Length: 121
Ligand SMILES: [Zn+2]
Ligand SMILES: [Zn+2]
Image (tube, rainbow, N blue to C red; front, side, top):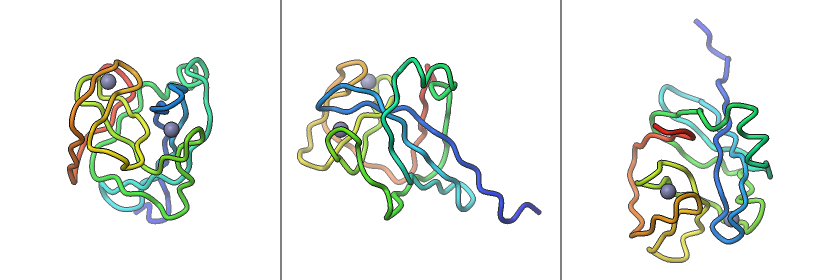
């Protein structure tokens, strides 16, 4: 029984406005429920060095009330790209979304459960 041990990880995201990368800290609090708690500026190179590109999260992801939003534009959420699987910040301003990583665009779709991946999953 490892009751109080919290699993935490960092996934890479990019800002839709500035196209600059940042890290999102996520924390596992219950079985298959992750909370994203913090966002911080991070260069792509530094993220690669830390292996954040390869972080993969499965299950449900919820926002912690402390989450400060995108460090560049303040966007409080993010979208996982259906094409490359990477994250781009999002603040709910429209139903249209353009991936800051690969340029894929389309309608925003929300799901209860999804897989996050920083790499070529
Ligand atoms: Zn942003
Ligand atoms: Zn993409």
